[in-house]
Every structure is written in structure tokens, then in C-alpha cells.
Figure 1 (cartoon, rainbow, N blue to C red):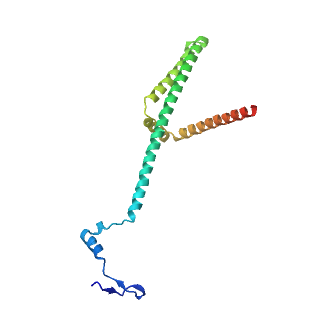
Figure 2: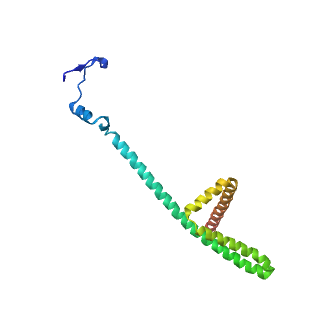
Length: 172
């Protein structure tokens, strides 16, 4: 049977229909699942490695963003505490100039700001993100308006910083 030739090939060429005995023994003993597609393994390995690296980088980026958000939260609560102190001082001035009934409004504002700072301090960054997401879902118009206002303020701050920097270079 080793000499068996198949003349059904295109172009009339002779093809050996006898299979390689080593391959035949391996395939018949283990079945189709044992066939080794070695050429596909490097592709799968490289693809999996890329996926793993991307996942690792994504996790690192998320951790870094949480760290920055935590630092920003601490700075914001510190700034809110300072604003609350300013309102308390203003309340004393209003008390002395206009009377205590008007000073109570400034004290009430200071207390509200202080309570807000305390509530921020007591929440994790993920909780704050979830709260912001819920707020945007409930009130998208207010969220868009707030984002536009914030964008306007940031643009004005950047523009004033650029104008101040160009004024310093012209004076020098």
C-alpha cells in the first residue's frame, strides 16, 4: 500500500495517498483534539499577553485616577473649610454692623458649607462618582449647564493667566 498513487489530482499529477505513519498513529490514538496547531499558539499567546498588559495598564490608570481624585477631594474639603471660616468672620462683621438677625444668614451659609465639606470627607471617591452619575441621570439639563459654566470659568482663568504671563514678559 506504500506504493498507492492517486491519479485524481488536478493536472494529472500523481499524489501519494498513503499518510505519514507517524502522523497517522498520533491522530488515531488521541483523536482530533490532540492535533497540535503550533502556528496558532504564538498568535493566541501574543493576543492574550496584549490583553493582559492592557488590563494591567487599565487597572493602574484607574488606581492612579482614584489617587488623584482623593487628593483633589482633600484639597476641596480644605478649601471649603477656609470658605466656611471666611463666612463665619463675615457673620461677625455683619452682626456688628447690621445686627444679629442679618448675621445669622452668613452663619447659616458657613454651617452649610462646613457640613458639605464634612460629607465630602466622609465619602469614598467611588461613592462620589456614583452620586455624580446619579445626579446627571436625574437632572441632565442642570449637569450640562453646570459643565458649561465650569468650562467658562476655567477658560477665563486660563485666559487671565496667559494675559498675566504675557504682561510680565513685556515688562521684562
